[in-house]
Image (cartoon, rainbow over all chains, first blue to last red; front, side, top):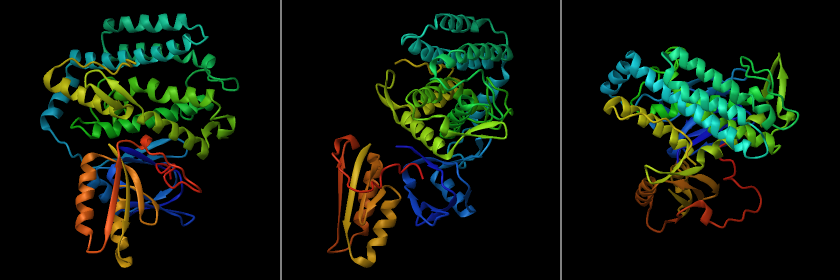
Length: 330
Length: 87
């Protein structure tokens, strides 16, 4: 099992007897079994030293840092265990070839639209009428082949997302108004959840890419350099509806998160610590869910699907086998 | 993946060896009792390492089940494995 460990307390993380120990500000000591850790998610105010960093590096465990306001602040990733000059060369070559880049970028958008549509259909079949949104998503999805360049694709993606988001106000329970996507800072509860959820997806993609020889900075849909690990933004795209949005719907519709789980601060609306904990827990449960994989002929966790995505992309770059994006099949 | 329960009974001044080692793999639930999910390979490494640590008169028992859901587990009081991923 590749577990993510989320640290919400304030305190100090240290290497202790060949594993990681958290000493909270209250003096409580807690141990993390390092052997099956995938990554540490640091949400609290944490002190650490270089000794811990080199230990995490040796163990191949990443640390993702979350700030109080902007949520995802950055990652400290282990030195790459996988290096392959050939993969990097092919990746850059493919990025540099307009046709090749466009076809990979199109796959990410196609996957993303397919999975948005799956969410909308789910609620369409449960006493909502989203016929027009489904048609719109289908129309945009069918038109992807006509996009002449990546920025046109980005525009189509944005259009699909707008149509998709228009269903949120109907899906979410009373008391939660979405009213369109806003970030930096998120202006209301739903926007705040989407920001937090997406940053968790993104951080998990960073971990997944690190397991391969792909370079996380060379991306196809997003411009490289837009953010440091822009390939994680690409891969995150088709997973956001499945991993982040479904958790949001579930938690709000079941009342596990209420308006009390948020605090207003300087025109921003942010999750409280308890709220973040509830969300992260539900998110981790989702990552641990398994589904029968038709090609691998065994059950894989949602978390492993991220890794498969990176492997598929690498295989496409090296062998030319068509890259089929992740599209929810169950 | 297998779910493991490990218990040990060793000389008082040597318990920390086992404690420190098992903490890297599992959750410490009670004095000399550990639980957690590991891969088959990790289990094999644990078996070998524990065997190396043992001295005459000491013992360690590792129980395995194929999945956590097969363990019928009733906890009275605080459950140390609960939320062990969230600190």
